[in-house]
Length: 518
Image (cartoon, rainbow, N blue to C red; front, side):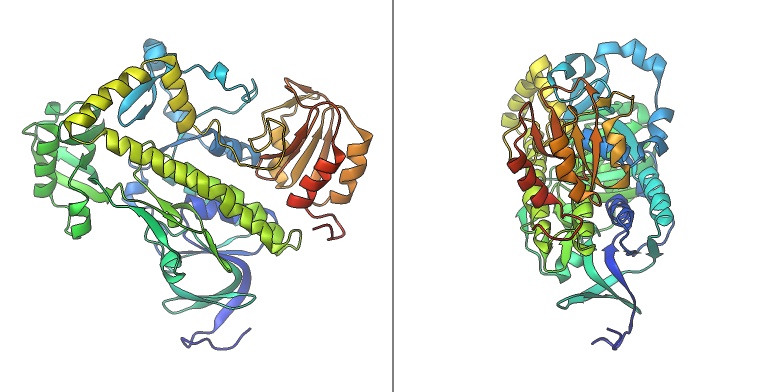
């Protein structure tokens, strides 16, 4: 369709997918799609210069186990260097079991209280449960991979709207129009795609205004290092001069639209910290809230949402980035399969049914922390009790497992206990890790007992699946398993193979090479 559109702009070359937003989620999704030979255009409203709040230490994020596994499975984990640079072996050795590895509402979780042996699906060859990276590092790594795969990225392109047709979407920027089969909004909490698409964004209003700042102080020693919950809020001093503040004003200041001035930050910091600290220079400052909202549906026609465009919440616990990257790896292979004719369009329904509950759980996790940090007597009492619980092995292990996504699960059909979980890090008899076979973006059938019936069945799926026969160390109670391209176990068995159940799972997630079977 090359006709002039309603706004007078002529669309350029058609793409399979247009992604709004070149943050980590949009870029990772672009990599997933391009890996499957889709043509992808990423439109980013900002210029290419990194924003100050994406740089260290503002941009530091903790990566969860599902994110780390996804990066390993796509051969990207080795490109992350920040976690190596930030290691301090002398400090770690000195602190030992008392080293803080996370927090819940500011209550620290110490390494010595976390019993990882309870996470039975995590085998000796597993990737780390958590790592430190940054927004800037992830964007750099994902951009490099996206460009290698042929993704087109255009900066300075602010999306202004779009129109859907039966087989395509017309996307408009200020002076250009583009067209694609599909549009995905990864354009953040104020998503134009979400607003223009009429998605319902339901949730709860904020309890506080948060501030991320870089400042110079005349009497910095008055402020304690680390995270400090006070009778009036919370402040976190990650490095001298880098301070985050939570002021329980119901989000009033953030909603006012007023600029964050030196005088205002000084007043808030003094009140929250209970000190007479003086701010001599405010270099960087932004405000945010704990507003928690989620799109009631992640898809409308040919338009989908991922990342902060689909869900927003307080950054407490740092799960927003991981939640968005999880959206990307869940959606990417499914959308690519639909575009490539390897799956029917209704496969995309599983994106919403699988990811929406995960997002809702993270929003509630964030709300629970905000409730615990309220500057009230009741919250202070509850805070003390939860602190005692997190000072135990049971409490710390449970919270760490939630933060790191150890038990993330999709409700997939099947009776085997591995079904719906991430594939364990099996080490095959020739030394390779099973996860390394997912680098191509195809699914796997791991056959630990080399069953001829399984091999015969999957020969019809050679374009979508790799058949991997052979024994594995620490294989647990499983003889064969079907793994989706995102690393999730879609079917598994131990002992006698239920071929009918396997064929049903294959028909749900994959299409035979002849293009029939759904």
